[in-house]
Length: 431
Ligand code: DSN
Image (cartoon, rainbow, N blue to C red; front, side):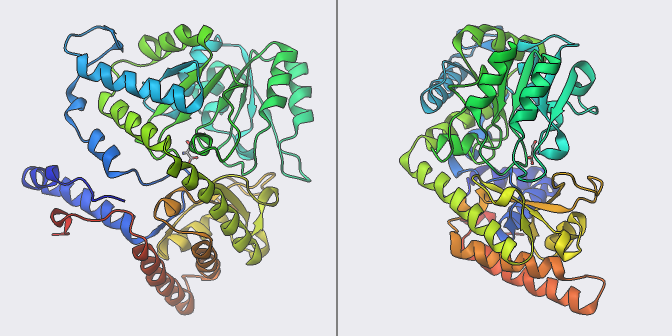
């Protein structure tokens, strides 16, 4: 990776040493540990440069060529580039790059496709869905009648027979496919058939996989979905943000649903950074990266399974894997705590049909987008699986456990520093 973009740090240090300290502390944290949160990655220096730019100063409500304010010539160029690059990369007929996040993109997609009170069929949260797919604590579960589908108990793969039965029984206006903790490929043609059978729109929430789609490492949902929603900061390696891709007849509805219905002024610095990331993702090297992400996640999942942490759904086809810890007698929450003490960041996660409550959980979720950006390969994944296994078994309440966790933290830092996340310029020395 390139040198971390530097000039403004000096200005920040002079003006606000406390926040400068936060930036440096976070940079140090990102450089010194192993980061396996499946939705995180390290952006390039170019993406960071676009984000930390004067484009944040510009109001540009509306769309290129049709803004509510003057002075938008430059930001129009940025937004047009982002749109054209996304269209070319994903073969999409229409793209909206303004959603502030994946949840905002999903809210706009609902607004474009359905009316409050309509029925929506989506994956149940404990089986891998997302809050915006019908959770009662989210707008989606409050304003829509949501029905959840599940994975099969025997294979832990989506039960497509159940999806069809529920669709026929409830006649949803919208079917959502896409997940936050489902490690296998989604069968987009089957979802399309079911949606057509009941006259529903099909939306694919591709937040997790869109970077793998860009890198041609998994099949694309674009030819099958009416709308694809996604984030730009996961495997895609762009800034934090969202994006919507759709078929042309829905383009105007999607645009109106984003602005003015659910959002105001777009974040032009983030849109410019999305354009940069989309350009980076269209290079052949990105395909090599995306395929390596998947090989790494398969190696990590197999390594964890060899240590007694069963691979949910029998393994993974994507950037993430779910491991069931019940055989080790350690819950996901304790595993997450112990790994954090050992310099490894990952998250607890419910496994399908989990008897534990979500705050305890029986599993962990790991993802390989960030470590692969650092240049790690399968050999390092096997090493990391060993570190996780030792950490999960180490009870910090005992002297031996606490000492084991300290030892792993040293090894995790050594490994991270062999593959630095960001090369540092001289101004980035910690004060
Ligand atoms: N929070 C994201 C994830 O970690 O999967 C999804 O919103």
